[in-house]
Image (cartoon, rainbow, N blue to C red):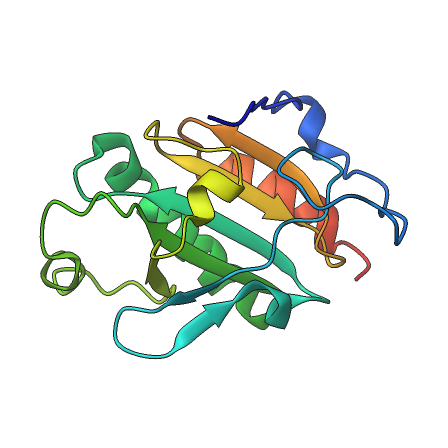
Length: 167
């Protein structure tokens, strides 16, 4: 199990981390370059993190069996709708699938892309079975927020808004 620390309390996360120098390590800590990955999207196609460079990216790790995860999905969807193409959002379902995710999603009109963690993305970002987990990367792919626990729309908007102002 990798060591994991949500090293930036939400109150302090409003100020984005300075852009990492090119030699910044790839890792799962705030200030690291986020590990690249490609995951299959429900409904077809793939999501590749490196394709979002130049854009603030929000990754939501969730599962249908996780009550807090399900409760916060509308916040990620609203963020995606509010910021349009200036913010990339993907909801990555845990590989511990216990029900038909396609059938679950068919009950909602979410605009965000949903993917399956088929290659260990959650582990690469320091996660485990504790969900939900939110990761936010700046335009350069640097992790500015990585924490387990529920978020509100206001928290997401504050974190993302600080990164997109003047962009």
